[in-house]
Length: 390
Image (cartoon, rainbow, N blue to C red):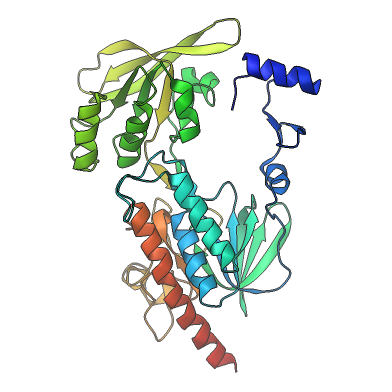
């Protein structure tokens, strides 16, 4: 990735006889240029399929984060026909983690992108099919399974479903920063942006492990990195090993602070962020902090608005599973003789894993564990269904 006003970008545009029009331009290895391409166009040019099958699949997996990819690996390796939907890029939020230090088997850590790529290739090798850049926007219950509506106007039928759609980062309501989103203000912490912060002053909003991991990666490049956290300490929201590493790396901790404003200057090549306004949550005092970039990792909302009403959710939209379906929804929510499986929703054959499930542990290893375990429940459901219809 190069800045549009850089010498390298200007040379590429001159060579291609193209002009920059305030929209992303992508140059492929063969020299072709795409002006503001869609995700589907980029997927197809890289040999990724976006087509949907006409046949009914044994298992549809919605979301290719760690949980969805794990389910795809185990289901496909055990003989099920599997279709995985991913509206953006494989890996989910974990895919943007610059370094996951505590994932089993990687003593020096592994980037979320590399871990996701390995899982994707493994699932593909076992025969799982992927519908890249395709978004599931609705569903309905069918006598033989589920119909999933896919934007813009297609559908797929599946005998069972695993929901692994994850969550989306919450936004901060600071109008002053809106002009800088994508150039100096980022939701999540992509490793792609880290090198661009070389020599800059960087702030990160958030007190969770993802914020800590981002800070450790960014401090390798930036002149200074500071975490802006609402609480008095990090102890309740971040693993102790990360806290220790942050302190050793010289990352600043701005406790009991929130971002309430910001601004920048036009240096001739466009508007550039140069400061943030921070307010102390207790005293109300405001200070202006010099800043070149802001990364925001402040929690998330689940992708569940498209689910059928029959799928029981809590007040925040997280999907309820297992025994909680009966304890919270009663027998109306589960009118079957058997108890729901641990990761099964209020609709038999529709399962949920990962961050989108209420009560899940927000860790990559936990999502992978749920994704692998859920496949045994899928087998049981399909076998029971086949027995009752034969």
